[in-house]
Amino acid sequence: EVQLVESGGGLVQTGGSLTLSCAFSGFFFVDYAIGWFRQAPGKEREGVSCIISNGKSYYADSVKGRFTGSSDFARNTVYLQMNNLNAEETAVYYCAVEPYTTVCGPRAEDYDYWGQGTQVTVSS
Image (cartoon, rainbow, N blue to C red; front, side):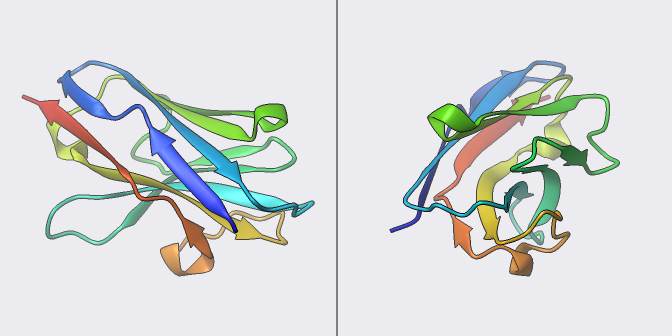
């Protein structure tokens, strides 16, 4: 059974930092992409970042220069370092996996398996 578990969310002040973790298990795809998404109340789920099994990372324009994705595939874990957060980035953050690919899908629908999410709250 494929499982993804996010952790690291919490409350932070504007300008602060958090590092999210996504521990994944139960799959043995050679090629895959792990995306980070966020969903604020009343808004659609939006892509934030993606890391591919070959180590390449991609970012939404809104977070470039502030968010950094990394991976420890030996530990089946990916991370999202988030710096200089602002209140508009308060949301539930999810990681998801798209198997059998070396391309980051831009849409939530591209990803087959999802974690339960972790809440990030940025106070103004």
